[in-house]
Length: 195
Image (tube, rainbow, N blue to C red; front, side, top):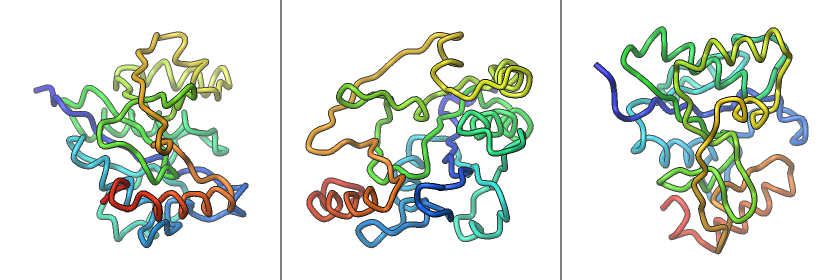
């Protein structure tokens, strides 16, 4: 039986170097963690959720989600997290045809996902057929490919547009100044952003 809604994966497996390390998804914006905001937006759109994170999975036990670490070594970037999710879906969610990926550092995700806002593309936000896992593993492991758009160019993509006004719903927190800007956005648009 094929499941019509995708499995959702929150990609939180990076090193957060620009933030000085740690889990960006645990930063508080407008009184809630980014992860709480992401999960609240993603859950109604998916058949189930998992979290891609490396290191001790116990630190995310409070989410109740399966924590899936990268299956490719050396923090190979978002494609490694997507691969881990595709492989997990194939092994643990029979009938799941697709995985929807979102970054764990975007506190203002829309409740109907897409991958472009304004003129900026957001390739980490995507819908990935589980059947791509073999090609993705080859690209990551054998070819050393790390750029999402280089991989998706091989398979074709469809783009959906999203307004970047009054704020970019795909704004992500990569540095301390981004966290301050996210606080400003949350305060200014509190009844619009993840109510």
